[in-house]
Image (cartoon, rainbow, N blue to C red; front, side, top):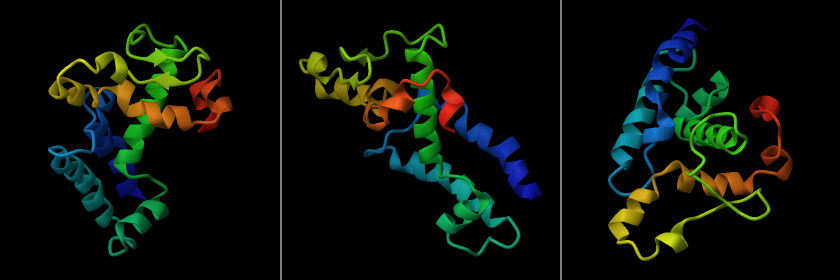
Length: 151
């Protein structure tokens, strides 16, 4: 459909530009931003002929797209893969990796003496956002040689 192509080519890139840097974390104060971003996709999918009256989740299924929160998580995982596998020249200090070189560790213990306001800001960094998702990935995915091996 033409509208889906327009959305993927012109609208979604604007919603996702540098998202690994500014990605809103789901906690008090950010829900408005998260809902506003998702609302753009929600409204745009209503404009597509034949599915505009379906519930949002069904529209996403029919169009074979995910919600923006899932895309942000996927983007964080891809960026983490690139940093940990030396595919990029930045980010080496972002992540604390366990001895097995497979799991990401939190810096909470090393940050425990910092005020809560500082550690709350730290929760929004990619290293903290991506950790639970990265550690839940199967070993074969974390040890892949290319980022596109697992779609």
